[in-house]
Image (cartoon, rainbow, N blue to C red):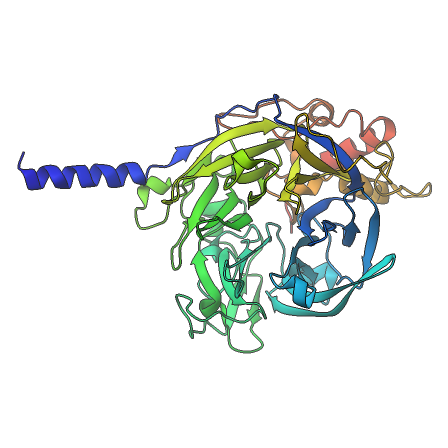
Length: 526
């Protein structure tokens, strides 16, 4: 072999090795935790934590609330929050303190904004900014203004709704999910399935890949299809007309995302995104401007109904994830640790796990590579993990009620003692009126047990698990009952069932009512 050819061969090999994807899905969860988990309080479906400089935190509740919480668990409801459509995966979602909070006391909210006709218009992702006012025992949002919105509305979950501020504190990156509609992630005229780069006022940021360009004046709106193949011919239900120039192209930083729940800058200034795959194929992506990350054209997972999706290995023109998970971890968020309470973890990334009930520590090599090195079984569906000003880690549980927990090194005194929960864990999150009709009762049961976070009923709900529409034609009432009280741990190759047992939560007449309701759900969503 000639020297020049040999050199070229080594360069090609190095490039192949550098771009190799890692499947971290088979990593086992350790029960040997290096931290003490202390529950401080509980909230109603908590979704995101934003720490203030004094150690207090703002926590969103998906049902529609925003709560100011002290490290000891004292809670104050924040007034003047915007209305949300709490349905399925929608509701009050993200809260983030401004990078200039010390000067302007601004906070940013992301949420599912209801349409004019809640029953028919659906909802869309909105980004709002307001000033947080704290006076004595009260707190409120003042001068709230929606600075960006997807005005198209419609059905579907997977809002994304994650924010990351640029290291220079000048720009805001907004992760927008594809709302379970799939194909809009590849449509440059729609914000769905994109990461947007905006100014702190919500305008297109200068220097974006398509800065100054505008898109089509009208875009088609579809309902969530059954799979990626059905999405290609999904019927158009309506057409949305932008009220002014369509700024989507000039806002877009990167394209081709499914459910981007994690978005964070590493200490070296690189931007990373973490998202849910379908049935397998959760992804950690290194985000670079102008790149297309492939959804729904490719995935390392498959559709929930088993319909295959082409592998990313078949499309070298699309950006591949650095890490993928088969089976899934069902990530809640992504953050980077910079504190001193765990000095050995400085610079590490942490991913929260919903279905996996895990915390995953990820190390980064500073060259665009990453590796999942630790995975701990924390026995809770972790929606968010964040770092407090004192360097402790805090996590919230995706449940109603859902716990707020402080994580401190084993052997270290717990400085923030547990406060008694204001919501009894054995009582329903939403009281069921004594005179509730069967329809009202079953609706509250579905809400209290977060069924729509994973399953789709009608046009609402999530895609973490198979839809329940028409389940009665596939399963007997006894099989449905067994799935509720004693779900099987695995439902197929490369798919570990994240569903917990509800035998201690739903019983007696309520269980009978829920089984009957599910058994009679129509297969059609029309």
